[in-house]
Length: 385
Image (cartoon, rainbow, N blue to C red):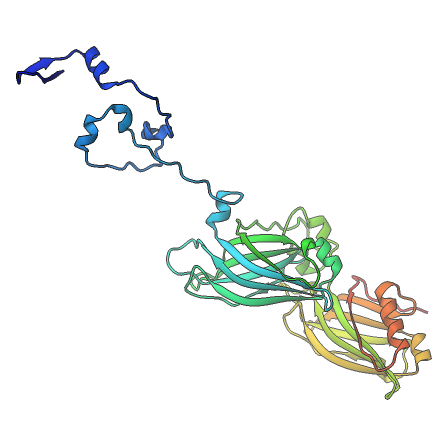
């Protein structure tokens, strides 16, 4: 190697002298990233070409290496959690009215599979349980990756027992007009046992990849009951409740009889192939007392959470009614074939638990409506002697 001498001529420098000149003593700095010196070991990193800097060629070689700062680790449990965005919502367990209110506020940082704008909505499910029975959804907000819904989804008939054992699943879907099925963008699950009754709680949680649904190996007696969410919950959901009904009882002193109100049902078992039912309710006061012992509500089409708000009257004194039993059954209407039984409940002095309490409380007071949710049995109510 040659360099300029004092007389303007070129002077020969050996390789040993060259190394001694360029490598000056000093503090040794640690290597921050090995990829700074060996980028070819990481084929997924695109090489960046820069024009050579003449000033950098004159500095020692140890200072010419780029000092890159390591990228910060993403927040959250995994890379997928932050990559899918976050969902902001509020939960309120209204214990006085047996209802669960879920208010979907907004989503941030959604990553749709296709580029451009995105149309999204939120779908809610209560687990364990049949997916169609507890399925609620918001409206679709179009043209944004940061949608704002500000919409409340309400589950009626939600009790303290449900809060202790159920989980709420919220899933954000892309409602694409070009696809027949919506594309899940991410989901999250909240154990409801952490909720304090009658106190709202806000959440802002990262979305995760949606868990795949696995069907049971054999179908249940009810055709729609095969739509369950998790393999681990299969044993528990196979004996899942058939639904619940909200009844209103009132002994009218003016009319001299019992007023029975069929208000609504919730989380009914799906009986049709489309995953829904066409429910209606039958009432029977046993032993029968004339032609007005049997009543039937109207049919609500394609729903698992029907609202009836119909009232029926049974004449009789308190002493007579106390010796009778009110049989309530929910059915799925089928045109041309026999109706499918969904579930039933019996209120009488021979019942137990809340059924007995509801019946006795009604007959002991006058002109006061008492509303109470009742779980439906999987077998029809049995007629006593």
